[in-house]
Image 1 (cartoon, rainbow, N blue to C red):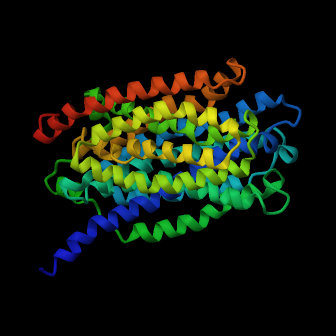
Image 2: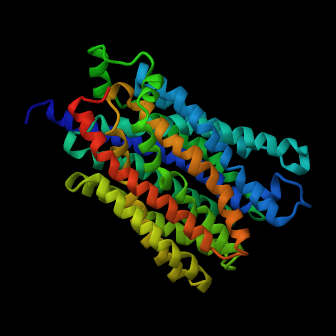
Image 3: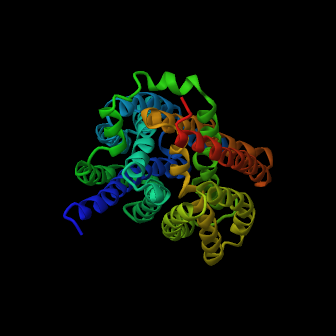
Length: 432
């Protein structure tokens, strides 16, 4: 073994770890907002005399402002990432997310500043979205572009694994915070937001030791970088549109089985919040195992097929998940969430490699970011508003929610399978 081989082997691992650390923190920040919006924000940032149903819709609906910021981040950071490199942009996105999240933890309540409270909340949520818009694409590419060609699905899954880690960590911190002081509404909900500052420092340290993407360095040396990556992506929009469709469930459908399921279980099924939070933590641990497993399978089968299996499974399992929540059984709810985590992992694990494969290196940061965040702006932004609205229309029955998720899954399956031809063209160099 030569002296350079250990270093060569270590580079993909370090890049995967850096991607995992960054996306875990970004998703932790994003998920604690969704959890707080479902459980707390109606009581803290909105008038106390507001109708409870309307208050839930409005409070949970503020989640959508994060999705409005994500395309802005994709345009801005995608351009910078394709022009100047992946690494410096990823440092900036992590810092920006940290500022937005820590700021939310310091916000005054409606009781203190009146209507200014929800306005400040929405502003910081928008800032979170801008950061997230530039984070995922760069983190995924950092792992994928450092990886050997035959292991891209596996290493790319570490960027996706951050979603599971972030969701589990957010549930755990909220579960602990609920027992501090007089409870979440009394003020302990702020602890998860303030704790994010510690995570950001850790993420910056890990990310600082990783080198620039070898593929980006090679493209820059060959003077193959695009002068206007955004314009180039929109000039041939087919990969972008298919990428948006492929990510519909990853950005929007996930709410059905996570934060909104928490709200449904508590308000419609009468299940204690602590019980569901604990079940979500356990399911998150299962998902952490399933995501890299799905990435590994994607390298040995086809990543598109693994993702399609995951989407079909999510569409089916959500029905018993919601119906069995009414049993109030911790074991039943945990088992159903663990099964859901299996299919979610199959959807998430290889999707980064799938999306990256349909864009050439010179516009890959922009293309993957815009595809992901374009999906976030549609399915992601609408879902937090659509779900409580559909539940209200059906007078508490989840049947319309099942239909909505099925529609997202079917469209996503079609688009994921369509990426095979696009990826082949990129590999042959026939995509402009």
